[in-house]
Image (tube, rainbow, N blue to C red):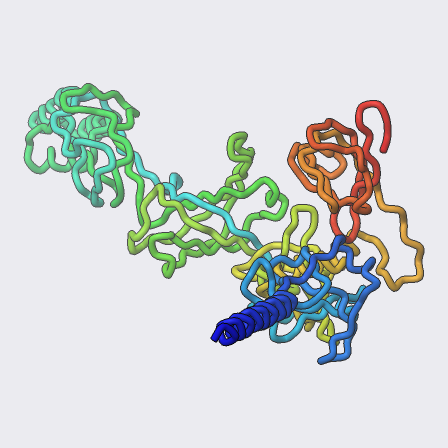
Length: 508
């Protein structure tokens, strides 16, 4: 009876030991399979001599990386620690001095589009802003030729619309009474025609209108009032009198400006002054109705450049017979030459402007993508003029080029555009330029050091916090966070690399 419990206990102990062994083996095997890949100590793949061969393609693999974090390299495949996606291999034959080759599937994922460099006829010109104004050359004035008084004013305020022949003001002229009564007396006394002609000449000399003199002959009644009317249809831009005011000969009572023709005064940027000349065509649109175009030619260029806006004014006449425009409207004007010229054009979105230069990504006949420095001209609509760097028929990347530019920088393509010869050239490579500045050490890692440094005038940098690569993990062992140092660096294919650090009192 005692042997059965003892045997049962031995069997249970053995079974527990077996289960523990199986669990340990399974856990060890699973952890070995799911262990994440190890990041390379240095991001410089050219120093990695442990290149492996991809069994699927037979191509040599330099390293694996996450395309979303391309600066981090790994020594074996696996899942990305940054994104829920597998790491992708970077092959040794992908990068070359003649560009980079990107997998077609990745190109599709990046949304890369291509466009051809084309030669297009364009009207040489530029865009400017203009303002509509009254045509001062068509303005009319209402003046008094006699001394009198405003008996009635028919218009009360400036900027009123008036029509041709519409009364503006009624004048009482007391000086007209005596010569008219004298004429009537001579006529009643039977004076000869010579005396009557002399009297009529005297009235005309006193600015009595011919119509008033004719009415005097017909009715025999003297007139001391005259109504001044609008000579043209337009806007009363000036009104200089009020009811009961005294007026003198030559005084301007009102000014009327027409609306059937307007001036468009265009502001020409100072940089374009030498390109502007009278006779150039102008096509203007109003922002409220861009479908309506108003065209004309520059009539004259006004002398003098505005000191506040640094612009030169050019003036032209535009037809406004339908009265759609009014003075003071802001209009966009395209100023162009009469003859069209041929220019190389690419989509504006294909141009990468860095401040110091402009680049486009060109697709070579072998499918490789290579950045090319170009000289750009004026923009016309959605296109940009290419003055040098490309030829007609070449294919350029019209979208996704910023992602390609980042990948190309990692593979040492873009730095070669600074004027250095390519890796395959036989000409000797010039020593890289060394820059230096002073800064405070913020962080030290095995691969780089972060500084809060002062401006670097040679590179056009201001004061900033920036990370610089170390030549090796063991370089600069005495540099600690918090130190203020004077350091030297050069530009390499992988960014900016430290070459020397001098703390207070010596070099390292």
